[in-house]
Structures are given as structure tokens and as C-alpha cells.
Length: 388
Image 1 (cartoon, rainbow, N blue to C red):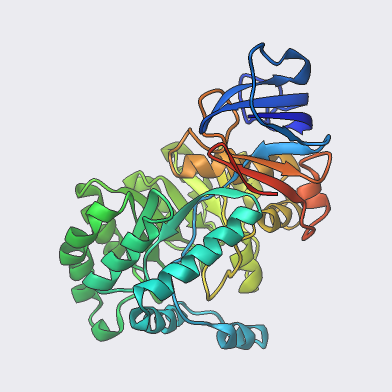
Image 2: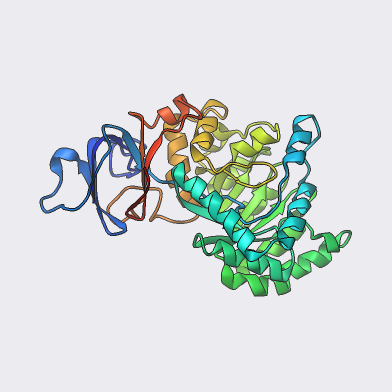
């Protein structure tokens, strides 16, 4: 396949000029599921043959990488959202509403809803996605959710440490022992990552450390929900344990940005969750100025960020969090790939997976310049046109 007549191509190739490695009047050759060649349209190598995709002068960029989602669930939390918009404060306990509905749902019901959301994300340009468990909170249901997530992605995250399960109310340390013991034994073979909600109303620093340490001993990479509701220990704990990413970071404490940067922990920001909970915007500039790698993600979940739309995330990052369009696009592609410690996605270089989005716009800047407008014209995933 040859994608041609690309007006502006974002490659994220550091060997090319600029932060985004932009090539003008470009083309991309695809062989099977991989990028075979990238360059100026006038320099396409001889022998490139096969179907042609005409970008019609539009901009093209790597498929978005969504490194933080909760897609496997059942139920609805419209009433909670409505109450929050009428002034009620967000607390972590609403997760238990989704746990009850998810436990009661069949595999096919959960599968159908997760696939619907995954397809929705694909239509807006997300070609790689991470999916967490966390709405089972018992051994069998957490394993079930991980198995279903594994049907949609190879970046599956165990989140038994989401909140304390309802049957362990008042006994959080017993639940932590379950998560770090029998639950991890059942779930570790089904996951690549482990996560914990280190927050008021969920797990404190010592409990979070215990869960993540147990997961690391079983060979899982680490992620953490940190500093969402107030300044706290989550960011520092991520740095201490060498987590791949610390996510949310709505409330940075003194030295948190520097600690993340020095430890190489990616700072994953989820601005729709802050919008939906009427929280302050994360200080993206402080993180970038400290030298931290910033990623962007949807945090798609039924309670606080019910969106699969990465272009909306990019627009908010630029207009509300003071990132530049180039920073936001990089963070939603290469940055999120780094949060998942992957280098085969989020970039358009030879050998990378052929995930490419063509916009009905001349520049990547339009993702922020025209917020909410459906600019994604064509989506190519692993070398196949899946939308457009």
C-alpha cells in the first residue's frame, strides 16, 4: 500500500527536523503490517506497488495511542455525573456502583460493550489502547475482565487495587493482602501491567506500595493513579518504584515534577477527567519544564471520563493546559507509547506498525484549532484501512 499526496506528515522521527519530524508533500509505503518507507512523495522508491490511498493534501500522523482506559465494565453512571454537575463533590466510592453492575453482567455483555467502545475509539484515530480491569474486585471477576481485555489489546493492566471491594468494607488491609496474594496469582499471567489507585477513599501510600511491590515481584510493569483528588504520595511512590507512568497528576506537590523526570516516569495527563469532575487543570508546563515526558490519554470510564475521543483530549491539552499543538500531538502518540514502553507504535518510521491517521485538514494544529469537529477522515491500523 502507498499512502500518497500527504500535505503534512507527522512522523515523530527524531532523526528528522522539528519535534514532530514533519515531512511536507509526503508519502508512506506499507508492507503488510509495517511501515516500509517514509519520505517526500517525489522520492518514492522504485518497485513500490499495491493499493493507493490518496490523502488529498491532508495532514497525516501516527495513530493515537491511548495509554489509560477502563473499557471492560457494565452499567451506567449518568445520575452520578448529573449530581456532580449540580454541585456534589467527586469521591472514589462511585466505582463500587460499576463493580456491582459488572459482576452481574455476562461475558458476552461485557465483551460487546468493550468492543463498541474500542470501535468508537478507532473511528476517531486511536489505533493502540491500554485496558485495565478494576471493576471485579474479586479473584474470579478480575481474571475474567483481564481475559476479556486481552481480546482487544496486548497492553492489559491488572487494577485489583482500584478501591476496596464492598465485602471488605472496614477491612482494607485484608483486601490488600488478597490483591497482593491470591488475586495476583490468578491475574498476573493475564496482564502486562499492574496499577493502583493511590488516593483518599482508595489506598494509602503503604497499601499502594504493598500492592505494586507484589506485582513487580511477579514480573508486571507498574502504573499508578496518582495525585488526582489532592496532593499526595502517588507521584513520589511512582518515582521510588520505577513505575512506567503516573497518571492524573491533577495536584502536583513540591518536587513531584522533578522526581518523575529524574526517575524516567512518564506523566500521563487525562484532561477529560478533570473537565468532568470540575477539577483544576494539571500543570503540564511544570512537568515539561522539569524535563518529564508527558503522555495524554482519555481515561475512558463510566464515572469520570466517558469518552474515547483522543482529538478532544489533544484540544483540551492545548486550550486548557497550555501545551503547544506540537507537544500535545506528540504526547498523544509517541508520549503515550513511551508510557507503555513501546516503540513500535506512536511513530511513523521504517519498521514501526503501520498505524496512520489522515485528517480532513491541512495541519495537525487543526486538532486543537477546530475542537470537536470530526477531522479524522481515514484510519489505517496494522496496514489495513479500518475507517474511511
